[in-house]
Image (cartoon, rainbow, N blue to C red; front, side):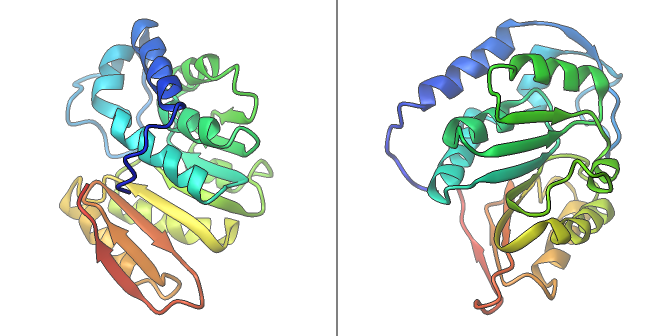
Length: 223
């Protein structure tokens, strides 16, 4: 979390972010989650989506370091948005297979175009449960990043569904665990889930492990 090393791949993360920022488009966004606190309609500029809805550069660096440290071989991201998270995972582990799921058609197309040179990333235009119930979903993932919907009840339901696609060492990352009282309540529920043995609350993100050899513990790390 606090690794201060200057990885040369950070330059690639910055370049990708700038390419998304400079490739301005207007997209019709289909929002299947809890909605936006910023946008008043579903016609949105990509540079504004980048500013308000995408992972910050610091978050993409942390995601990069996590994928590199744990040497992930495959990952699942639910909530592609403009592709910043997928790009960080791909940059960290170029040989890993990365599935990323985006429900909004035009957003999915934009991300797919931006990520076309990252051949290990596959962008799926599906709603989350639709994808999880399809044969496109891999048997097991090393890292699962839930980065969308922001509804507490749905978050708990997704986690229970995702357990079947995880193994004992899978890392679960949940975005915006304090986005609302509903999301915070869901996070507290998951911390006490019978399959959860370790959780880390970083205020913005929540990390979960289900390692059977570890007793249930909760930690707080402020980034």
